[in-house]
Image 1: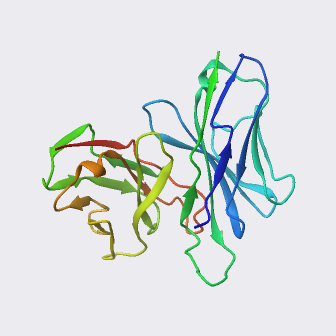
Image 2: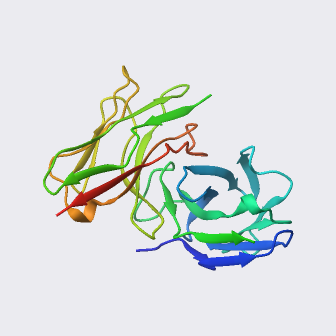
Length: 120
Length: 113
């Protein structure tokens, strides 16, 4: 069964440093997403990405954040200058099967295991 | 704006007990509705979904029915197991293209043997 993978599983960084979180979505998916979950709190939408551009973003996704799909397989989230409050679990998700033998609804999302970001 | 209200946890039950986790939502139109589950130390997994009114989603003994009239999507299971211990998230989609989910706050379920 194909799955979404994320690296690293845990990232520790100093405040003000840049971090890049990496995701490999399921290969024939068309939509890509980042969510975050501050410890013990709800899952919050950050951004969705389709056709090589951002399609939706939340208020959390300010100028410090950016996303990229540099090579057709990876999907990255960059935080330019991390703050203490960026400490959270970051989940990547993909969805929107482009067709094939096992069609799935466009509105089902498959989540990766997450990257725990700790900002000191 | 769109929002989700979900039963506060934590919920602690004995094995084989009946489970209900309430979820109500506000949204424009008729969103598809999802329940996701997060087992300890893992990411989110789709548990079940319903895409239109009166649809019933089911998986692993869990069920939820799309109630348009009450804008609810309550999760139920007749007999819980220790392995069901997890956090459960109700999530209506924000628009018809699945561009964004609004997740509920999550309900932590602990099932005791």
